[in-house]
Length: 276
Ligand SMILES: NC(=O)c1ccc[n+]([C@@H]2O[C@H](COP(=O)([O-])OP(=O)(O)OC[C@H]3O[C@@H](n4cnc5c(N)ncnc54)[C@H](O)[C@@H]3O)[C@@H](O)[C@H]2O)c1
Image (tube, rainbow, N blue to C red; front, side, top):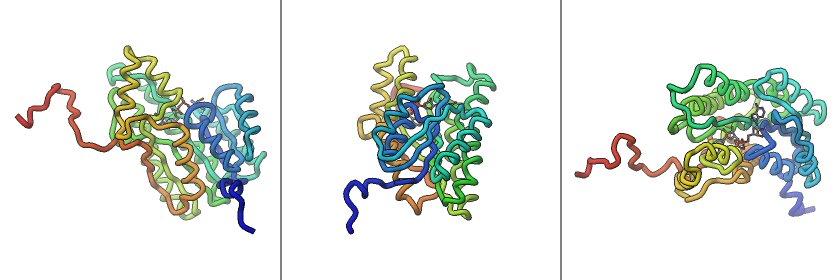
């Protein structure tokens, strides 16, 4: 019997995904997309309560979800997140490391070693530890990990040295993990988004003296003339988890072309004199 349209859209039916930072922005959209495609999802944040969101996503179905309060800077919380997933759903097919933060503008002179260490703990070591505790289960299912990195980890960004360093490291760590885990047929990939309109972007722009100009600058950075959406990130993640079965160690640029178009960027002078 031919599969119905509804069955065909259940691209991750009965698979189990763990998504960190799933209560807002890109993470929330990924939880929704995976549950919509039939997956059972455990999602976390360090917020103490997300029952309403859990109920809303469960009700929409057809998959299932559980919210767990877990601060990914705490190793014990991460162990608990993985234990709860396996206790409830029996297996793990996909881990999406997404929980992260971009601090407001930071110069090197105004940044302490502790500021840098705190961000490394969240954006990098958190990804490492969640992978470490999920991998024994991912090896059994020949599953996959998706690390949410950032375009700026490749091309840099003004006043964001610690953030750029953590994301560059996430992209590099993804490749190193892909090499080691290939013998278990576990695929490890990263997605590097450019500007995606989320509560994080909104929060960052609220710190600017001219929020409107900052948002317009964020829009103009893409060849496509707009920011990406959290839903577009979620669709890319579902592709890597469900159909990208020959992808490992890749970094999927989800940027609207932000890295293209060799152009004048010097911060030294307003006008370049090379043509005069
Ligand atoms: N929005 C963008 O333009 C953009 C671009 C490139 C990369 N990213 C990356 O995408 C990821 C998600 O970004 P977003 O814009 O959706 O952010 P967001 O602030 O809108 O959402 C972040 C989520 O992570 C959770 N979180 C934060 N700290 C946590 C902790 N210690 N433990 C557990 N959960 C925690 C938050 O509760 C929230 O659910 C981040 O890793 C970010 O660096 C975002």
